Length: 367
Ligand code: BGC
Image 1 (cartoon, helix red, strand yellow):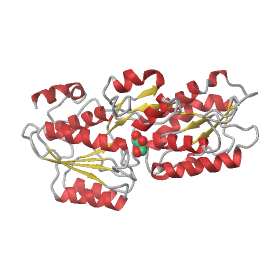
Image 2: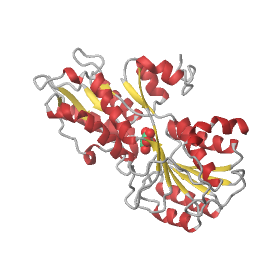
Image 3: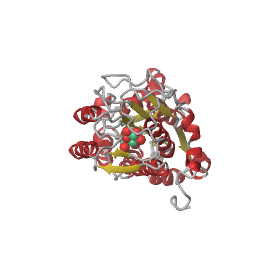
Image 4: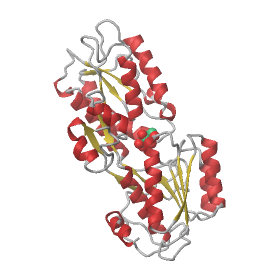
């Protein structure tokens, strides 16, 4: 256990303890962080990243001597609400929640506050509730900027002109996930100069986040939308050059839609440049095969470790410090946040960024 504590020391530095009691009165266990039940709620097992997240948080906490009750809810909001109420009844000391719909849990969060259980919003911000104590995530606006940078580089937008504009279509994440706003805004701010000078065009005209959102990040829905866009707006000489995608399964689904109408095989129709997010195994394979252009790696191990350190700090009755107290307003309060960095992965840096760091093994990648 000592070694694990050492391994977490880097993250722990971010939480220099003040020794003050936790403001919410929620740190019930003062016994040096040992023991106690922690509730961890993740949205779904059907996405690779949440399994990694759940495992990272659970293993990290167990290594420090905590018991963990980890729940997945198959992207079903009533199930997730029930799970949180159950965990409160079971007497968890801290709740770590990655929501499905960030605004749907206000009653549960009020119940947690009434029971003096601190709530950590994990990766996705819990919205419209004063009963959210901390937020641990990546810098979602920067992640969106990286999605924009991927298109700028992959499409060589600096060389594009209004005389020969580059055609893209835009996809956004689930409208009920606050992260979708950061991803979209970050990307669009990067792409704006190219739209402004006419070097970048969206032939469908579908630009508003409300129109291009993908409920529950559903790749099948995105694939259908891509198919419809291709048949409605891309005939004759109009060729799709790039796709803004906020999520690897959406990227792969869009590439499938493109392939089904000849992209990647017919003359003059190379596969469009598409980025993504999460660095899932299938996307890394696709990147290595020269299909998906890039992805954004958000290392779930770091997010898990940061969360474990935060939980441990609270359980020791200490107040975390060094947090961002400006960026994340959930509509009811500014939630103190710890925001980690993400990395763009292209074919050129798969080895150092993904394999050498052990994020995926060569066996997983079929290498
Ligand atoms: C996460 C992304 C993830 C998406 C779909 C977002 O809230 O930040 O990493 O790809 O949800 O699960």
